[in-house]
Length: 491
Image (cartoon, rainbow, N blue to C red):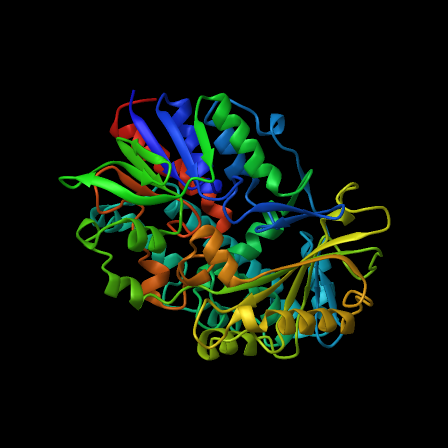
């Protein structure tokens, strides 16, 4: 039986483990944290339950595909429920937009501040849908070699989603008002980038959320990781937590296993679900990664990161929905702070997830479990989180008070902060960036490192690889697994 070691039990690694175990491989998953999930972790503080990591879930079919690949039903392992009109956006001028799949409702909300933008909404969404469908055709399979990437159909598809156009440039073909530009510009952050520099392909996410929907998970988003673990173990995969891989072992250009503090595991195939850049730099000799030398890795700009606060408050806030975003007067300035100043924004947009609004039991009676996120820079010498975290935390909580969340600064029953430095320590995220590298340049947006490693038998899956982004992590694990299965003629 062919042996596979999966490094990292994030959604990409667990997805690959499920598919490979179902195909008959002997699969061992090694995770350095005490629990599976990678960047997605469950945190419980004083009766409040939080998800630290992805909280907005879309692309339901991608998750259904993982379970179906093993002959199972997703509904037997986790329950998704649609979130309609639970995605609220509040702007500095007091305008509120609750995202809707009804174009007329969206036009009416946008018209409250700009008739001109409202008239352009449907045309923009039509282009967003075209881009989404083009992306779907391109990312229906991996293209691990340069020959695959030179496919003429791939080149034609690339042109359909405007590879030389930034998201901001695309949006300005339709909209003028700062509120609308911020509303749709935020999708660049899903790729770890700035709207002014990130690719126009991010506009496809507007179609994804409107047409396909955003979902909540009963019990919290962490139930996705928990459900995948249960299925993988049912199929015979072994999952070991609190085991840190220290080196990928090779011989004559081929993987032969991994070295850990708990001993060595031999393997015919290794699927690395950890951060692609960190794995290459930390676990492989330069001779085993000819296309990713230390100098080349240093040349990549890391993606943005996040500063996360988990706050349990014994009160409810009428202004909040399941997902709420508060925008500052100058939305673009925070990306100048992050990517040029390399410091946390002085006045950032603030995202608040209140999952307890949609489901009882995630907070005590009359309480709110609030996951608060501010975009932040990757780790640099310009900012020391150890010294300045508390002051920045208090500033953000006071800002939320200004937005109507009165008392959150003075009265939390539970409060925890999580910085980019802690993200790097827990998950080996490259310089604390969420997505490995930003998409702020054409090179990094279009030519991300391949899912195939420099060694024979080494593959990469997860949010820092192709297709990229946390929403596609499970899909990348599936596609990598399919390549491995095909290469061994197994089904």
